[in-house]
Structures are given as structure tokens and as C-alpha cells.
Length: 253
Image 1 (cartoon, rainbow, N blue to C red):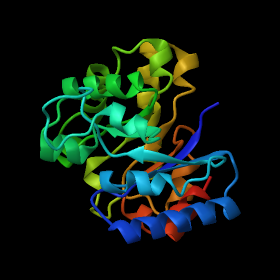
Image 2: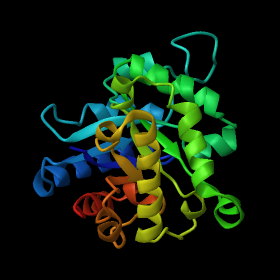
Image 3: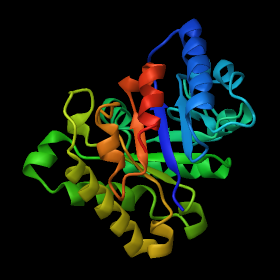
Image 4: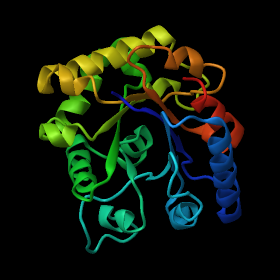
């Protein structure tokens, strides 16, 4: 059975006080309003990982995630953070290959494959992002573009490793633009990605992998998106900075 997951990517937002306040609000609301069949992941900037972790109850369905990591375990990589460092402070999920990392920092599919390996080797769960930009959506082949990202970055994994991966489909043309893929567009791409995984790993495994939608999801459209057969939750950006919006999205299942 697939997990319903709502992951909040804060990106480069909040200060220390704001991070603690937002986390406390989410934890309190989640305890009062959400059932255990919804997994929440809070993904703050690196400086706030440890303080945020201290506010997450041990018996809780709210988990800690990181926005990125390096593929090496240690070394002369100034400004980078390793998967082993993240694991040592209780991080359980790591976002890999977000469209902003690909665009602004030129991360390649090959580099992302190494990052996925690093995360899995430390016992954490990769949230692997994939998605197409506007020019591909309008003038290219979105399916071919996105499945190539999967093939080159995660299809080297053994079945037991692949079973631990969470996929996040990001229609890049809908991130931060106010545009949102229709539920039909989201379902089509999610089903296509699941089929692509099935062709490599079989139907049993593909049916167990959670595929999240990551493009301008908010309380008003989450119920429609989450009602799609192959949409198992969301990777939430701006709306995750509001505890009320973030929890309301999670209540949309």
C-alpha cells in the first residue's frame, strides 16, 4: 500500500524563531486534525534542521527532511553537507534533484544518481524530483523528457532500493507561477511515470511507490489533485510556509 505523503519544502525561507514557530504550529495541528494514514515531512533550510527536529515528537507522523546533500561522505567540499551528517541528526527524507537545483546549480542526472545512492546508503529516503520546463511542455515531449530523468538517475537501483524511493513530479512551468496542472494533466503524467517504473521493475513494485505532485499545490486545488488514482500527495513549496495551509492540504485526502 502506498503512503500518502505531504512534504513541505521551505526553500530559503524563515529565520530561527520563525522556523520554530511554524514547526510547533504544524505539529500541534497535525496531532489534533490528521489521521495516521497521512505522513507529513517538514523540510527546512540546513541551519534549522536540528532545532526543528527537537520539536518533533518520537511517536508522530511528522518527519524531518533536508533539501539537498552532497554525494560524498566527507571531504574538501566547502559549503556542502553530506548524507551522513544529515542522518546523524535524525533526518529521514532528503529532496534530490529539485528543479531549482537543476536550473540554478546545473545538477546533472549523473550527479543526482550519486546523491540518491548516498541517501539510501545512510538509511534515509530520497524524494527524487523530476519534471519538464515550459518549452518542453509546449514544444517537446514531456513524457520522454521526464522518464529520461528517472532512467538516468534511479534506474540503476536494485529493486529493494527502488522500493524506498519517493518520486515528486514537478511541472516546472507551474512552480511559482500560479499556474497549476489540471488534475487530468497530473494524473496522466503520474500514471505514465508509474508505467515507466513498472516496465523496469514490475507492477508490484511500481504500485507501491508514492508519486507526489509538486507544482503550486494549495488547499483549494489539493482535493482535486489528491483524488487522482496515481497522485499520492504533494511536495509543497509556498503553501508549506503557512501552518494552516500546509495542514489543510494534508487533510485533502
